[in-house]
Amino acid sequence: MSACVLIVDDLFPNVKLLETKLGLEYFDTVAAMNGPDAIAICEKGLCDLVLLDVMMPGMDGFEVCRYLKNNPVTAHIAVVMVTALDQPSDRLRGLDAGADDFLTKPVDDTALFSRVRSLVRLKAVTDELRQRALASREFGIGDPLALAAAETGLDARILLIEDRPGAAERMAGALRQHHAVTIEPDPQAAMRLAAEGGFDLALVSLDLEGFDGLRLCSQLRSQDATRAMPLIMLAEEHDRGRVVRGLDFGVHDFLMRPVDRNELMARVRTQVKRKRFTEALRGAMQASLQMAVTDALTGLHNRRYLDNHLGALFADETAKRPGLAALILDIDLFKGINDSYGHEAGDEVLRTFAERVRQHTRPVDIVARYGGEEIVVVLPEAGLAEARAIAERIREKVEALPFSVQRATRTIPVTVSIGVAIRHPEDTGPGDMLKRADIALYRAKAAGRNRVEQQAA
Image 1 (cartoon, one colour):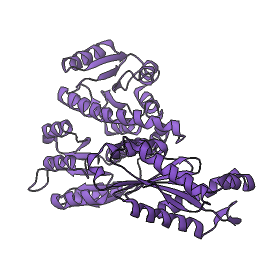
Image 2 (cartoon, helix red, strand yellow; image 1 turned 135 degrees about the vertical axis):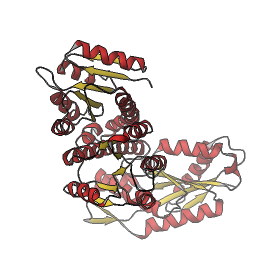
Image 3 (cartoon, rainbow, N blue to C red; image 1 turned 180 degrees about the vertical axis):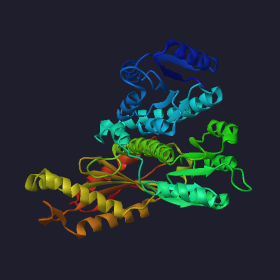
């Protein structure tokens, strides 16, 4: 796995030792001898993961980690703190600063490599989401990185899979200060709960009675419903080999027994924050994709979406058989509405018009704003008679109820003219069908408006 690891240590021999070890595992490395230099490298995006020494003069590792995790530009970079300190309070301080893991010197090679590989894999996924989510800035959604980095990691739903009643209650008691915890001793029932319950995280004992906890982790990682749920293994000292295997196939973290209460809460909070960070990025990405194909005023699909999907329908040979129809709708005398009541009232009319059209079309239909006060409705699997019936229903519903404007202080009557056309076998593209619908719309306007006209035979 190709990745660049930033080694931060004020002692040159320590840097060279880690560089050599990681180089033999085909990782690229970059080094910094102090905190400010490390931060500068991270802010430039020159590394995928940080191995950070705690005891440094000036700005120590805890300060560096806290800065990186509070900065939206660098919050996604995994930080593993490397130190000679081995007390639970030291680990807790590092985790509270936002560290993703904590390795004690002398560093065990197997633990180092498995942790680095695991965190690099997670960062690769996050990086792709970050790049896509940043596109949301163009649509005025806000800064998705800042929103994601502000996550606290509290108020999560946690599934604790543990068949030792005493241990389960001790851990649940600690976690319930900030989270909702469900204890499930049976692994099969736990799988069903995890798939149905929308949990934010699962803690899995590796020593379940009569069941391999590591296999349960593998099953949770392989199922669509639980693949994105963070997993933390609960292991005995003799389970270190199994812990490494779990990290290799994607388990997110582990805790060694006896479980320290504070470390438990810190690791859970870290994993929940990371999950929600990823979800926030994914949500921003989805929002930007949606806005790219949506008309901001009416909420309908926009011209880009219409062109792409109508083109695909025309390219699909099977679409020729069941039929394809199009309606072009144009609000009658819309300029007069703007002139008499103002453009804000015109926007209110457009929004209401779009909603009425959407309410009286089928789920399979494509409804898009074509430009100005025109809407196009594409009707898959519809012939001329059915298309005309749908058009008449829309026309009647638009005319039936006056439109509220000026914040519902008054109402005005609105009507619509509609042109109808169907696909012809000789059509070379969507433009041919839409041109016939546009000609039919022109005839509807010329014949007095508030009517439906269909293409000439």
